[in-house]
Length: 212
Image 1 (spheres, rainbow, N blue to C red):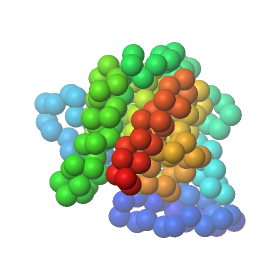
Image 2 (cartoon, rainbow, N blue to C red; image 1 turned 30 degrees about the vertical axis):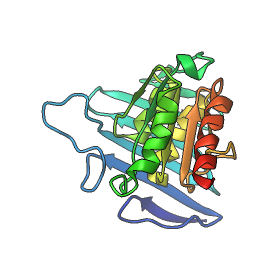
Image 3 (cartoon, one colour; image 1 turned 90 degrees about the vertical axis):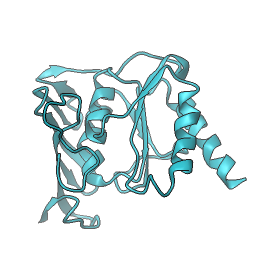
């Protein structure tokens, strides 16, 4: 067994079978989309750590130092917030949902493309939030503060911990076509499971419109 150490945005390694991967992400950090602004309690900040073995995430922890909230999960052991069990929401329609998203680093160059997704979801849901931390967005989805989330071009250190926490809280993740989610992919679509198929349908129509 070999350990490849910490993986963050400055030290990325491709997945290799039979290796242990430890993903670490700390925000705010130079080059991230969520810089900390003194006196702004709404600005995202987080420490995210995950342990993966043979491409399966076993442990996940996301800590928000601003709100002193610690989200944790262990595979097949459930998810907690400050050691209390959490579950996803029971919202069963996108029309009644609160969603979240973020934008990749190339959003200025590809604004029209990303805003097409934003418009498609905005015109169907109750509201959309942009917090600046995908890890926290997935945790908020896991504890019922949000109902759904989508984003493009996230990295493993963005989603490794949060995706396990969400799964253990009863949520669901996939790509934009409903295919199984992988932290190495470029598409992340997450939900409370009840509105997942509907969200996939919305995302698929956006993709198809660009193809046509």
